[in-house]
Amino acid sequence: MKQSSPIAINQDQNKPNNIELPHNLEAEQQLLGALIKNNELIDRVSQNGLKGIHFFEPFHEEIFEKIIQMNNNGKSVTILFLKTLFESNENFDSDSYFVSLVANAAHSLVIKEVADEIYELSLRRQLIDTAEFLEHSSYALNEDKNVSEIIENTEIKLYEIDQKGETGKSFYSFEDSVAESLMAAEAAYSSDDGLAGLATGFVDLDKALGGLQKSDLIILAGRPSMGKTALASNIAFNIAKSFGDQINTNDINQSKGESKNPGAVAFFSLEMSAEQLSTRIISDQSGVSSSNVRKGKIDEREISNYINVANELKNIPLYIDETGAIPIGILSSRARRLSRTLKQKNQELSLIVVDYLQLATTGSDKYRGNVVQEISQITQGLKALAKELNIPVIALSQLSRNVENRDNKKPQLADLRDSGAIEQDADIVMFVYREEYYLRREEPDAGTEQHIDWQNKMEAAHGKASVLIEKHRHGAVKTVDMQFTEEFTRFSDLARDQYLPERMD
Image (tube, rainbow, N blue to C red; front, top):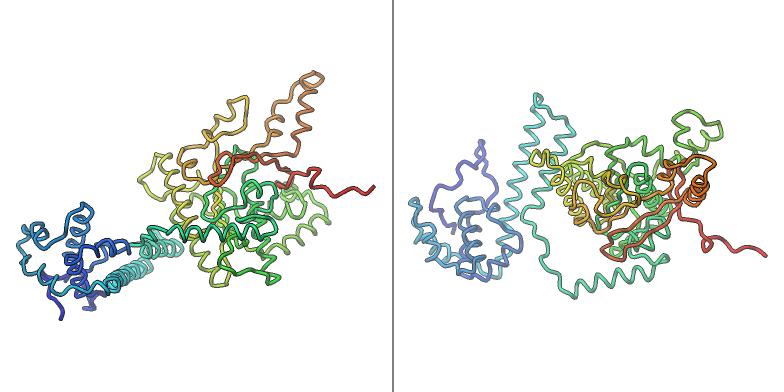
């Protein structure tokens, strides 16, 4: 029998057309009664994600919040104690109501099902509110919102609904954790390259990192002109190209346990346009200078090669978003949407690249004028996105000008611009450093001993770059030397004797 409420129930929540919002007052009453009757059920219900906001009746929400508060404070939840909290409310008889709740309490064996129903009905009400927002926004032609903004805002609301009440799995047993660790070790052992993570396409970098690990936030930082965008785009292309090759050969390992398989890549280019980024990649792969392409200084053979390579690469699963000053909430929403779309094609999103941190925003006026807090919120958002999608996120970052004021121009963790939170939230922090860039600006007068010494240093540094791994949550800090071809903004493995083929005698 449906237990009546002690006060007028939510009359203002009914729809104007007399269609009631989804709810079940009896389930709410039965659950509250069960919690009062058996306090051991309180933690079980709250850990499953149920909160006061999920109750339809505001009075029930208030009772539930009081129960949780008392339990958190180590107090027993009893009818007597609850009555003292509500004795000032003259609108109902607290004595009889709490007694009736306990008398009609749900059995402990079905408490999860009752809590799940309350939660699901709450989500349905929130979905209705979101649908009304979508309908109103779509009709409101006088508001300064375009269609894409309405879609983005609706997706964010839908995601927030999905997350409300979600607490995740509070604890993993050590047995479960060990099983996951063994799977990663087995995958690394059985692989040809010995990597547990996603291969970047660069041998030495992969050895130093063990590949890009899922759920990691990787900061790639450097001063302007060091090549951080070039390295990030090279890695993104290598992974997307590898995945594209597998799609073409139908050689995709769909094993759920595999974490290192390449997949599609999302590249958020907040500074460069999609066309500029694509030109860089095609230039790298075709061996035709992007600078010459823009200036028209290429011959018929070069333009033919450039066009052929562009046609070959056009179906690579590399997705570029060129929105400038994108709010982190919108960025995350678009990444989730792409991930869902790919899964419908039996594909996976394997990497996100953000170029670069300081050009993103929180989308909130709360942090206006406080760059440090804003960057902190952005890095936290990216780390949360990496964990949610269970893929690595590479975020590029600028460095402060302090580097330029030192004799030793190699960057340090303290040089990360705007916020110590970048270092704190990141699993890996890498710096791109090219000594050649600084030497070129320090050329002494010709004919002097200093100039001869300078020439020797330039010759040794020419075409070389260093990736300084200064923070590595999974391993040791290390310097990785790489080849850099400035004309094509291309990074490659450094050619050394051990990589060269054996000579014929």
